[in-house]
Image 1 (tube, rainbow, N blue to C red):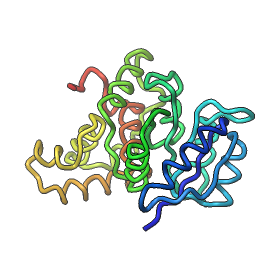
Image 2 (image 1 turned 90 degrees about the vertical axis):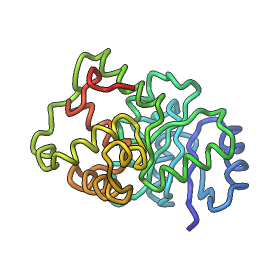
Image 3 (image 1 turned 120 degrees about the horizontal axis):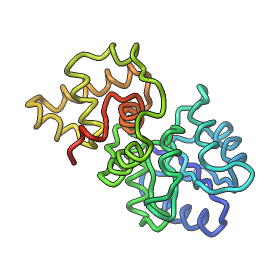
Length: 224
């Protein structure tokens, strides 16, 4: 299956460089590019890409709001990877809250960029330790959940599913969760799928954000 990608960045050189890098990767096609957030939203609606590689800082409409609009559109089924110059970019967390499935640095190699796109497209991406620590640090700074606990949705989870959700929030892979809980990896995959369906979430990244935001998992309880 070919993964169709839309590249949104206000720098022409970045758009061109990423197009060249991705064009050399098997199974990935650059469907189009956008020079700002409004164009990214419009082109996503028209091209219907599988993954949008989105710069955070863009004119007319920033990448965070563009991400929010794209991921909220029921007619679209695509993942968003946000681009940042620094891994501690203050806007990365807000982009994840807006619906992004992850982030990568602008100096990523073609292989790293392609792998991030494949993982995001698969929908079963694990959070890297850097992203997990960032989420925890942000919640510690804010002093608690950013939105009221979603009690009704959380109560739909079984005890085992709550265990798995906590481990997803720690950034563990299916294999690592299976080893810790002494379960088959396929069983863990099934649990994760049910968690996403019950909580109406797009992927593992959003599950981790949900766990922290609602207070189901708190920074003090996570041991990295």
